Length: 218
Image (tube, rainbow, N blue to C red; front, side, top):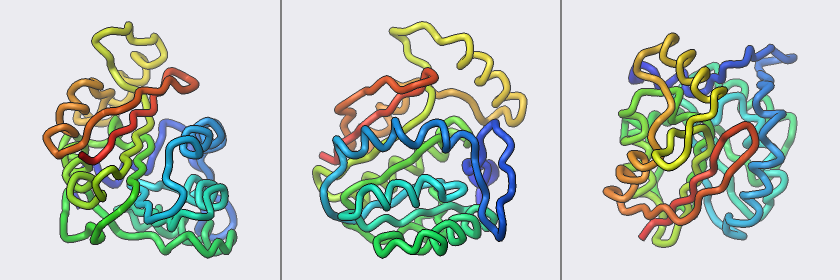
């Protein structure tokens, strides 16, 4: 596993342990509802969905429960994260939620076969090296069906908008933890996506100075 990729399951919040192997992330409690609102509006009604850097697995359970027509597969390179995902999934007992994959975006050998109808990646790009973003785009570009959806969520730098003070402080704290981390430029992310055959189709402002960026496979 490449250095930094396993850290994508983390946020800047402490993650307290719950009974068994399940972990609980405070960030999930804050952002699940607004993210789900966007997913309900833009995700396909049916099809295969791959979640990258699924972390604790709480998002996977919430989204699979709310979108029963989708076959949802969470993934994470961290064994700790996968154990947590499996624990939450076992508790939920959802027929459309698959076992977590040991997927590393830098290792194509770990990628599932396509075609996929959607790829979802929440709070990974800024908590991983830039190579992870390049790997993510290569994965989505090669595995999504034509017209398939890539969903990104997190904070970004934007040339046409001032950086919020809270995001600036967050960026500094990320770089203090690992110089390879940090908020990415939205246009730079879109450029890497375009090179992989993905067109940025929508920018949606989210709570706490986050964005959802939606891309379609062309």
